[in-house]
Length: 424
Image 1: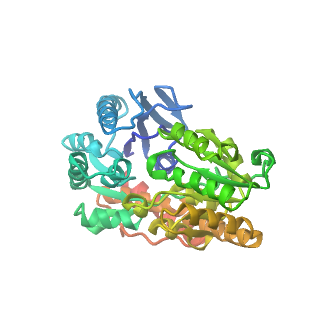
Image 2: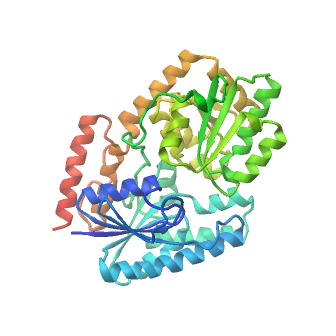
Image 3: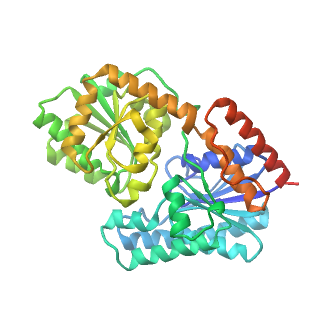
């Protein structure tokens, strides 16, 4: 039986949905899975066994906001993850280190254990150099350092997983990985978790409509653009019948709350902070329109945002800025505002709210696209194919996409067979 050690730094498990879906898929295919991750809200135990997956957690000293803060956070995370890796190795053991960035510093752990005969799989969640530029607006020493760490990570990886085709192209061009060693495994939503429920009219705070947002409150998420769009809707268009429910926490939450006060729109916006799934689903199921205001930059243009597919899974029409991967995910389930234009974002939101038939059609199209193309069950076989490639199983690496439930069933059956063969 193959044993997997997953390393992740930015979210605890099982809260990190992509990591948890990957872990459960590997477990179901016969792998033994351990996860090393930080603690977080609702995930405070230092060790926990959940659904036969062993989770080892460490505490971070700070919630970073500046460059030096991130350096301290990452240094602490790498040191603690390395110590816990030895604990796992000496107790349960592992055959492969599955490292999820950021940070790309996990190559120091994966590279070390490669010297002991372990495999190293790089799960490319974020473009670290572009993420740094998006957060701090500069290309300085740290940006160049991140580029070097990214190259080192790709060079050390036996196999790399990309979350979309944009990331795959970067792995091949900038990381110089052979195409056959790079797999696209998208972060598909889990329809069993994203349940459609009746709306809770109380969340509209007495207004006719609710616009929903879920995501991190950070600089590159563009929540400030959304708040300026709210200002234009209220004071420019004279619309006081729309409420906004913003779900999520992060280093910029307090700043966004202050900005809402400064713009005079605080009474039209509810900031929930980070909340459990039932509360998140309450907001999204009640929303008439969902919004993704991610800033148009190199990072966001190339990244697939989970929130978009979660909106679609719940049958919600979307308004977002016109970004490459956002358009690929949503297609006709979304309206696209001009990049970083808060006024156009406001106009698109109101346009969609005032057209219920169009909202219903867009929501149905998005739900159907998730069911037929984007749900996690279509991506799980690709993850298992990537794992088979670690041991040279001779699998066709660019596995065909499962476009129908019947095709998905056939592909899952094949990958279960590959996994069983690899463990013998």
